[in-house]
Length: 349
Image (cartoon, rainbow, N blue to C red; front, side):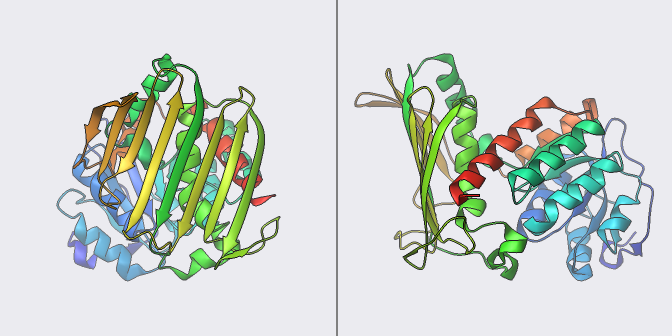
């Protein structure tokens, strides 16, 4: 098949290599195309179907992975993508569609890998997780910063007790730019502003590193163009600060923003402080892609990992490999609700 003229089709069969799951992609904007190309090149799955609101974008994506995905066809809609002979679906559509599309796929017996957020609210997240459990299908979200080189070691340091008792954490994600898609600025479609877009990664890392401790209280302040917003939030914030107090006595401070005058493209950091040391993830020179991870003790620091590191597609490839071995429900998906619950609390919902 000539990928440039890949047909719009209601259904198609894909003949995968032995042991490789058959995957459909919904949404091939920047992030979706990046994950599509990464998975195709990795070879952990066979790309069988691609759809996007723009048929031209879907055809261009098929052409971009033609070397690795010779069986891929272009579906005219999400429903037609689901009608194909698939094992799983990668969802990278606008956020407001994530929960309903994920549930539709799960109800058809397909595993799901979804871009963040899984849902706009904790209630939607709970419904999606329960659908995955009811249909015994694998569900995962692309919390890609977990896969940056050095982050697994950071998690291990924290959970092993090597840092002592962690009593404080500081996490920031400031972006000198705002999203370039109109739907980000529609609360019904996005579910929120910079907290939903950027802060969600900080919340995921915080809970993961601390192993999902009991939360005692959450306070927050949200701003839009410098003005303090009321809560429950009905306007989109472009700056937010939050404090999470844990039952253990530990306290975490989070801050995130769009269009901050940071003097560089981005400021990204997650620092965890314990009684015996600290561990810090930090971006390098304002980069969105290059990071260092360090283990600190007093004035000394040891580098656990440093870029460059091609980490963007690791999460989707890991999901595909897990799908090949066991497509059933993974109980770790229940933790996706915890992330959504913190976001709801920050928004005052």
